Structure formats: C-alpha cells, structure tokens
Amino acid sequence: MKQLRRIRNKPFWYGVLAAILLLLAAIIGYTMYVRSPLYAVKDAADAFRTHDLTRFEQRVDIPRVVDAAFEDIFAPTADAGLAARLVYALKPMLTSGMEMMLRESVAPTSLAPKIELPSLITATDTDAPSDYEVTDISSGGTTDGEATVTVTLRHRLRDVYVPLRLTLRQDSTGYWRIVRLANAAEVYRTIQPFS
Image 1 (cartoon, one colour):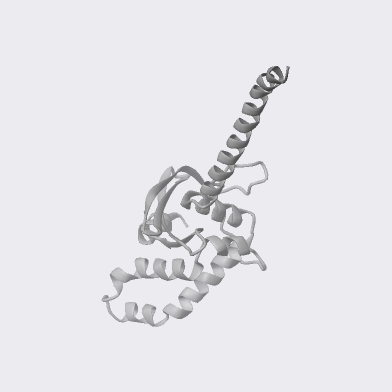
Image 2 (cartoon, one colour):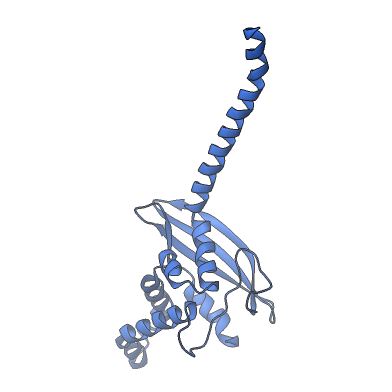
C-alpha cells in the first residue's frame, strides 16, 4: 500500500520541482536583464521621462557625458583661431551650464525650457508629446566592462533619423552607466537646423 502512495505522489513532486526550477530560472533571467546595458539605457530614459533625477544620475554620468560631448562637438575647431581658443577657455563654465540644463530638464525646478524624450519602453496616454519617436534600440555588445547601445530616433515632422550611440561602463556592483554619447557631433549637426 505504501508503495502505491509513493508512486501516486511522484508526479506531484516532479511538478513542484519543475515549478521551483522555473521560478529560479526567471529570477536569474530577470537579474541578468536588470544588469544589462540595454536595461540601463531604458531605465535612464524612464527616469528622464518621470523626472526622477536621482535614478537618472545613477544611470548617467552627467559630467563625463557633457565633457565628452563638448570635446566631440568642438574638437574639430580647436585650432581654428581666436574664437575657438575663447570657447575652450570658457569650457568649464559652458560644461557646468550644460550639466545644470540637463539636470533641470530631468527634474524641473523653474521655468527653464523642457526637453521632451520619447519613451523607450512603451508610450502611454500620459506621456508628454515629443517631436521624436524611438524606432530602434539595439545593444552592440560588451568588452572589458564597456558596452555600446544605439537608440535610433525619428523626428516625426521632418522624417529625419537620429542615431544615438551611447557608450556605457560597468561599475564595481555590476550595473551599467552611460558615460558618453559617442556621436555627439553628428547628433548636434543633425538636430541643430530644426532646434
């Protein structure tokens, strides 16, 4: 009789074991996704959209991004004469102002102009209207704690595509932070005519 009960209970225990393994796989998969460069970009965009400056700064190294963008945009003109030397002399003040404007755009505290960022996750009815929509987001791969994620935006009114090539670095805890807009000069030249 005891043998018969054990045989009847085996399918139950196999089911319990399968459920535990499935739950474990889901937890491991979610943990790996949350520590991926793609998630970091989506989380930064969501923090921007929801005006969560603390979370945005956890995902974006604002001083490094601004400094790298300044260098990318103005480096070709560095030897162009007096005006270029003046711009470089004013670099600390200009980058500080750019950092302040970016933080103000994330968490508005005054009447400063707002920058609208399209949702990288899903657009909702409560999202602010934006001239841009995300058409593609892809991860380029990781090497030695550095990764590239490309977010392609389309200007809705002008049908112009703007690829944002973001460089991310992994910190000591395993989370990723955006440290550079690798094609800042190209993005600036593309959006400047209709800004």
